[in-house]
Image (cartoon, rainbow, N blue to C red; front, side, top):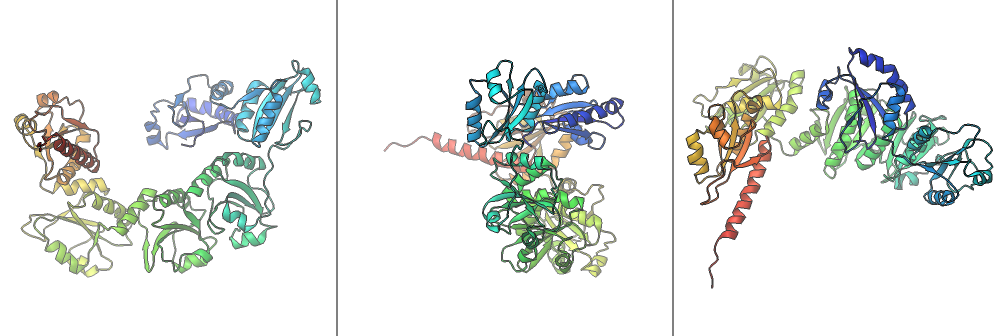
Length: 630
C-alpha cells in the first residue's frame, strides 16, 4: 500500500539455495538503494503471510506494485540479472538533451522549481552508463530531472557549457546555465518562530548540533511530502534551546506539526529511515493524535480523552502508536487522542499510577476507564463502543439473584466469574465483549468481579478463574448451569458453545419439504445447503442460527443436508458447501429451484441483504397493483 515498487525475497532458514542467494541479495540491495525498495521475508517466522501470498517454493522473488498483480522473477540469481529485471519497473525518465530542446526543457523545470542533473558525454572522462543514469533518475525523482548530452553530436552546445571531458553537473532551479552547481536542493534551516509551526504543516528534525538523517535524505523528503503539502525543516536545539525546552524535546527526533497550533504535534518513534519517516508524516497530519505535556494534559477537560502512557524503548508501545492514529480518524469528534512519554514525564505518569507500558486510559470527566483489549484500532473502537453502549452487564450479588437466578423462562445468561489480577481473565475480557455483541438480543451476557465479591463467588462454588457458566432458558431449576470446558476462549468458540444450548431457530428440510414449503409455499425462505463432513459448514452452523433468530417472523430459515439429499442440492445448482440461498415468495409465480445466491457467511451482512431485498419486493408489489380509474 506504500505506492512504491518493492522487490521481495521470500526465503526459508533451512533452504540451501536461500543461503546461496543471501550475499548476492545484500549486494543487490545496496546497488538499488534509493531506486526501488528491496525486502526479505523469513517464511519460517511468518508462515501465514507467505501462505497468503501463495509462496510454495524457496527462494521466491516477487515484485509488488500498488494495485497490480505481483510479478515473479524466474531468471538467474546473479546481481546483474536481478538488476536488469528490477530496472524495468523504474519508470523515471532520462531525457536526451540537444540544441532543439535543451533550453525549453530546462526553463520548464525551473518554472516548477525543479533543477537538472546533466551528464555530458565526450570521448574522454566518465560518461555514465545508460542504466546508471536511469538509477539516478529513480533516486532523484521529484528533486531534479536527469538528462544527458552526446557531445560528439552536440559539439557547439557542449562548448557553450565549457565541457572538455565527460562530466556530470547540477543546475539548481533559477541558476544560470553557465553555473554548474554542486547542491541539488537547499535544506530549509529554520530560525524557527512558533507562528510558522502553528499555521502550516511541517515535518521538523530536531538535532543537537548534528544531523540525525543525512542531508540527502531530507532533500528527498521534501519531494516525497510535496503532494501532502508538508514542508520540511530543521531546528538545532543548541541554538534554539528555548523552543525545544518549551516542547520538552530532550534528544534528536522528528516531529510533525499539523498546522493547527504550536501544541498540536506528534513525535516519530519509529525507525529514522527515509520512507518510514515519510509514511509517518503522511499518517500523522491526517490523524488526530497529540504529543502531551504537563501544559496540555487533559486533567480537567470536558471532552473525553484517550491517553496512551508509553515508553519509546517498549516494542508493544511502538506497535500501538500507528493503531492509535487509525482509531483517532474513526473517532474524530467523539474522542480526543494523546500520547505521554513516561521517560520524559515520569512525575505525571507516577501521579496516575502507571506501572506498565503501554497503559491506555480513557478520561471522561470524572470517570476513568483503563483500556483492556487488543493493541489494535479495531480493539480500541470496540472498547469505546462498549463504553457508550455496554453489552456486558456488570453483576453484583443482588443483581445476579434478580437477573440470573430469577430470569424469565425465555432468557439465557452467560456469566464470566473473574478476578482483575488474573492474566487469563484479562485476555478473555475483549473476547467476552466481542461475543456479547455477536449474541446481542439472543443471550444475555454478564461478569462478576470475584475480587470485589469474594464471599459471593465462594458461595457459588467458583474455584478458579475465569469460570464461564451458561444458565439456560426453560430450566426447571433456575440455579442449574453448564460450565465451559473448551480449550479456546475466543469470541467465536464461546458463541458457538452458547448457541448449541439454545433451541434451534432453523428447521431441517427434506426433499418433499423443499418442494412443498420452499418452492410452493407462501413464506420467504433463506436456506443453508451443507454437508455434515464439511468443516466450513460446521463453523457456519452457529452463524446461521444467529441469522435465523435475527430474521424470525419475516424470513423462515431452513437447512438442507446435501449428503442425504444429493438430488435436491443438484437440482438447486449447489456446487460448494456451505451455500446460502434466498427464496422469496413472489405471489403466484413459482420460485426458481436455484433461488438467489448470497455470497456471505456473516449473519449481520446476510440479514442486511435480506432486508434490502424485502424492501425491493414490497416496492415492486405496490407498483404492480392495478389502479382504479376515477
